[in-house]
Length: 243
Length: 58
Image (cartoon, rainbow over all chains, first blue to last red):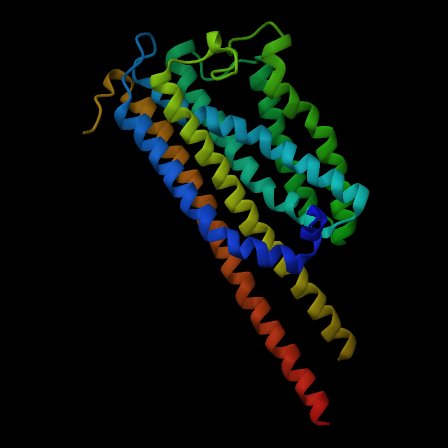
């Protein structure tokens, strides 16, 4: 079986309809379980006090804010190369979810930064790239809404997505090579020396899984909505031709 | 059960409140759009089937 079978809207609707209840269940377990574990069952940090609990929202939201854009990049490239409509619709469906995660990352970062850094905001490379990524999300959504022909809209938004990937990349990796600013490096990495303590890391991994599953769940749900909207438009166009 | 958040209670609860509000809003908006679109498609498809039936009767 080929992955390109899912480019068929009928096949996508069938498979996603089967997957949705399972993904919903796993999302609820990971997200509620992870947040409960992190908020109620972990100790305060010796330096940051109780603000360390913000990590269970801020880090997963920031990871998913950039990951959503990378997913949109892949599906946009598939649209540009292979012209699969489901791919373009999946990118369109993911944008409001990525924007919400980005806003959560920015808001929780500001709330966390104020007591720890003494400022709500700094023009730090990672923060600035992340803010610009948020603006790219807004532009992407606005462009889909502004262009009437769906194929033209998919073409233009795909190009915008490729351009915006620079800022998704910068906001994810700027701390590794742009050695200035307030933001620290990765909270979790394969290098054990850099990781947060296990007591925080395990609930954090659970929350990251929860945010990832929520993203998958909402992309499936919203792509199904977009496919139905496209089908409605096709049927109404046929009605008008027959009238 | 409720942890003592100390002097940072406002910051922590504010972060959780804002995030949960945004996530719940996103989920509700997605569900509402999904249901609205499904109802609209059902109505359009029913109309198309009725029209096809009329054409067959003629």
